[in-house]
Amino acid sequence: MEISIVEQHPNPLLKRTEYRFEIHHSAAATPSRDAVRAELAKSVQAPKERIVIERMHSRFGTSRTLGEAAVYQTVDDAKTIVREHILLRNKVIEKATTAAATPAGAPAEAPAKEAPKAVAPQGDAAPPAVAKPEAPKQGGPKKEA
Image (spheres, rainbow, N blue to C red):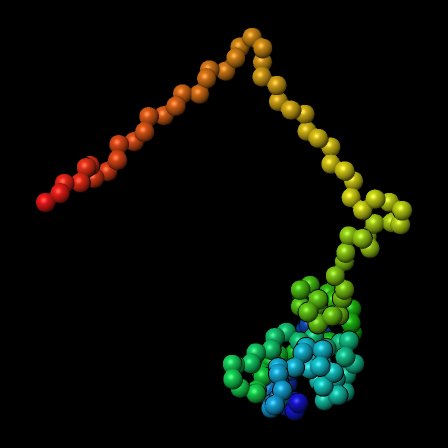
């Protein structure tokens, strides 16, 4: 896998440097985000934890992948600026599970209380439902010629 940086520009407002890159991966499948992050970390001399890959795209049948990434000044900057699903894809954060959120010994989910059943009033009963008449069929009977 050969990675080359096509474009680089700093973005001080968002505390990051943005990169457009191209990967040539002949005789191999499209590399994973984790592998690309590791190669980008070597290329730009930055820790892998601060690199977030926004998107990667490869066309069918080609051995070339184009992508966009950003290297943030700190991991906390990345966590506050980048959308959560992108952080999950890049494995910068872990997805919270319900089992991890509940304390030990407590039930994972409280049993749901049953809703009281509706009771029809005794004296004033609702009128019975009236059946609707069937609509006439369109077209009428078929005539044989």
